[in-house]
Length: 338
Image (cartoon, helix red, strand yellow):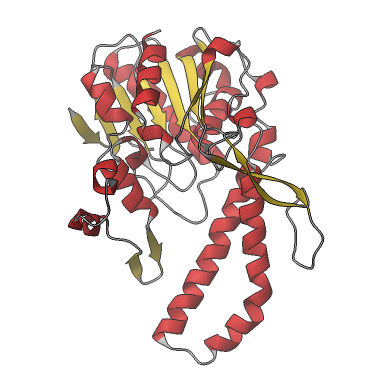
């Protein structure tokens, strides 16, 4: 049964309540979401999509898409796909204790600093150990969430030192995590930078202010901020470079990684010359069949210190849908049970 609880120092103005399922497994599981996401990632695909397509703006929420509209029957299998269960319901079926927490609200700007995410994960670890009387926990992170798990094992927070966190974690599982960074993040950042070339034009339009134009300018500013956030996951960024596989401590249960293997992978390795500002790598995108999840390459997602049996790739899921894959759930349950 899915329940929602509050934890002092974790839930609050920028964080949702924790989602909890009960069970009798040896180690409780803590689920950590990715960038500009929240705990809905682990509940249902429909809620995750609704989260992704409703962006807050200064005057309130502006829905870009109404998921209920998909129930009209004109969209093939999409309504059925939207009801795909997340990992929490599956863990509830397996009677594995688990908790999903949010270190930010979806699309909060700026994105919660890594230091905040680490502190809230440390606090959630202590809460889970007390609630279930366990000795250690299992960490599962999607996308940036996998990096949050690594940082929590490597760096201190006001809640606890990293050396204590390492004693309290049995194993760490990463899903579609850019361990070596994401070149797609470079591209996204560059798109936002190039939109900035039109800033003077948009400022001129603002002088002829109307409700519609004002809304457009708000969205433009927000779009720039959103794309800038992806630089956190670019190759060589601070968050990526400070959590290398070679720096990770040994865990009793080890490290595990799942990579998405979609129909195409958005790779940025084609040199170009032009007037537009280029990504740090000086590249534009190229589509490569089956080499990643359209955001993170297989090489980056599978970069863990343990031998190959702890790595797997799941086809044909992309970066957003992989956490709702039944095959991923089967793999995770097998790894969690050890």
